[in-house]
Length: 121
Image (cartoon, rainbow, N blue to C red; front, side, top):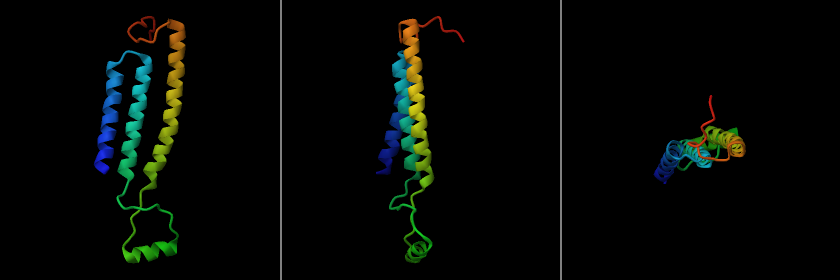
């Protein structure tokens, strides 16, 4: 089960990198950034998962009882919190990138990166 998560994360990362390197349309480049973001999120959540783990929501007496039975397997909540933060940041970056793409389309009349020659750093 966990191997499928890692394979899907690698596929998403590879597709995102492919779109960033090969595609010339700015909308497709922003979609590639989104795929990269989704791949990283899936990878982080998969790393934090513990097979057979439970949510770490026990009080002291329950934890002592479970540790006596040898059944203390928790899922690490830190990767989940990082992924939640990453989702919010990814949504903001995507919205900002799309707004920049819209302005470029209005100013230059095209979304093809090869045809936009007047952009100089």
